[in-house]
Length: 467
Image (cartoon, rainbow, N blue to C red; front, side):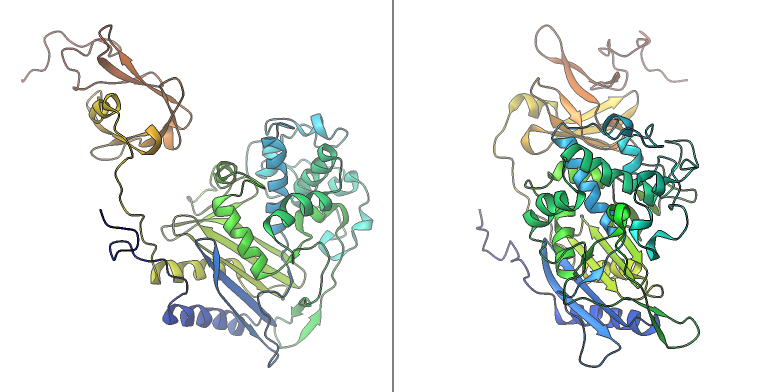
C-alpha cells in the first residue's frame, strides 16, 4: 500500500498555474473594458481557499483589492435564507408553516416559509412606488407599506416569481422568532462565526462608490446609496471579494457553527420547477441554480443602483468565483463569475480522491451486491461507504439512487427518484433473501424467475417460451 505522500497521490496545488492566472486576469480585463465598469474586482476559491484575486479600474494606480467593499444587492437574500434555515434546524419553525403562525397580521400570512424562500409565494416582485432601491427605507416604515394593497399576484405555490418583498417578510420572520433585529442575528449567527469581518449593512472604508455610466457616452453619474430599512434583508449588504469567497466555501461545504452540510445541500436543491425552455436555471432555498455547459452552479447575483455582483459555486469542481463592480448596469458579474469557475475547472481539473477499499467487510451486505431485476430491467447493487448502497440501471436510462443505511437495517434514498424512499431486503423464514422491496417495487435475482413469488400479479407457471 503506497503512502499518501507517494507519487500515486498527487499533492494539493496551493497556487494556480501562471497560464490559468493570466486567463483569469484577461477575462476580467475584457469585462471591465467592454462593459465599461469604473472598477471591477474578482476572486476564485478552490477547495475552500481563495487562490486568486484580480481587479481592473478606470483610475490609474487605484485598482481595488479583495478587501474593498462593494454593495452586493440580492446576494443578501442568501444570508437571510441561512438565518431561516437555522431556525428550522433548531426546531423553532417548519418550512411548511404558514407565515401567519410566526408573523401574524401581514397580508401574506397564508404563504409558507418554504414558498417565501423559493419565490413561489405569488407575491409581487417589488414594493409599491417610489422605487425602493433608490429611496430611503423610512418611506416604508411598516410591512403594509412594503406589501402594498395588492401583494398577491399569483396563486401561492404555482410558479416561481421573484419577490423582494418576500425576503423582507423573511427578515421580519427572523426578528419575530429570534427576538432580535435582523442585523444582530446576521452578525452573531453568520458573520462572526465565518469570520466575515468586512461584510456590513453600512459601507466601511475602504469601499467603492456607486456609479451610473451613460449608455451613449463615456461619462459617469454618482448613484445614491440608501438605507433600505425593512427591505434590508432583500439587498442591504456591503461585502468584499475575500469575504464572499469565505461565504462561497461555506455554501459548498457547510459549517457546523452556522449550518450543516446537509442543510446547505438542501438550499442548493431545486425547490421549484424549471421555467419553460429547460433546466438552464432554477431556484433552491435562497440560492439561484444554473447550468453553464455541463456544469451545475449554485449561488446568487445582485444589483443595486451603482453596483452589480455575482457569486457562483461548482460543488463538483470544488471551485467558486466572485465578481463585483461599481456600475448600475453594463458589467455582467454573474456571467463573469461563471466564466471564472469554468476557466479554473477546465484548465486545472480536480483530481479524484484515491480509490480505497472499504474499512470492513460485512458478508451479509456483500451477498446483496450484483444484479437485480425490476421486471425485466437489469439493475446493479453495490456497496458504498458507511454501509450504504447504490442501485443503478445496467443498461440504458433508469432510476439510479444512492441509499443511506438506517438503524433498523433498511436504507433511505438520498437522491433521484427514490429520495426519501425505503429500500429493504425481504428475507425468507430460513434467513435467505427473497427480494428487495423499494417503495413497493420488487427487485428479484432473476427476471420473472420461477422463484419470483413476490412479484405482484405472480409469474406465469409455464415460464419463458419461444414462439
